[in-house]
Amino acid sequence: MDTVLSVEAARAHYDALGQGQDREMRYAEAAFSRLIGAVEFSAVRSVVELGPGTGMLAARLLRDCLDSEATWLGLDISPGMRTLAAERLAGFGGRVRLDDCAGDGRLALPDASTDLVVATYVLDLLSPTAIARFLEDAARILKPGGQLAVAGLAPGTFSHAGLTMTVWTLVQRVAPRLVGGCRPVRLEQRLDPQVWQPSHRSRVTAGGIPSSVLVARLHGG
Image 1 (cartoon, rainbow, N blue to C red):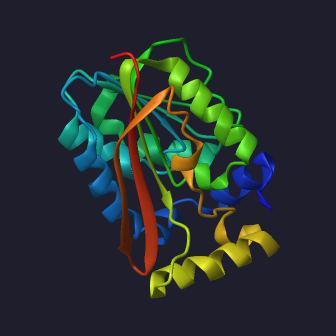
Image 2: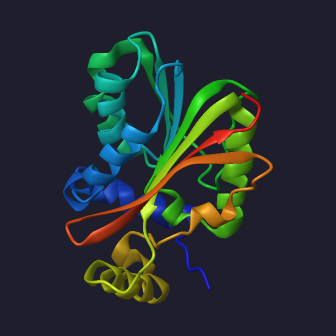
């Protein structure tokens, strides 16, 4: 059974964590690189990222991957994280916008309004209902042929890193605040094949923590 933090508890946790998130997520760099290598950026002119935290991935996308006119919108429940992301991304000027969100997976944006939806180490926090809502809204706001790019904690396997995640999952079920509310999610099993065409699935381990990376394209492009 999934045990998830309430929106209020998650907001308080990440507000208090602040810049410490960068230290805690050093293992994420390898997954970010894998995700960047799997996304087709040539036609991406607008990006929506759910839960960008301090803007680590956004800075790489804006600096290295996106067209100089492309825009990025970050949606985060934590005012503290939005402040840190705004500071990190200040050099990109009007291309960047940060906003609050409900924390329940909803993306309150117009239909067919973006080219790429990104979520890294945030669906790990959401309930199954909220994840389903996120996927529905991602499909709704993406333009035909748009892409979904997701990275998160990978479920345990018969390996040292896999055993680490098995223990992590047990801790999360008993005391979710100790691991920031995060637990591994098998997102690929939740994708509707009538809606999504996966283009990349992989697993990468860094710092003893395994992550899964998934990129899928919305049918119709």
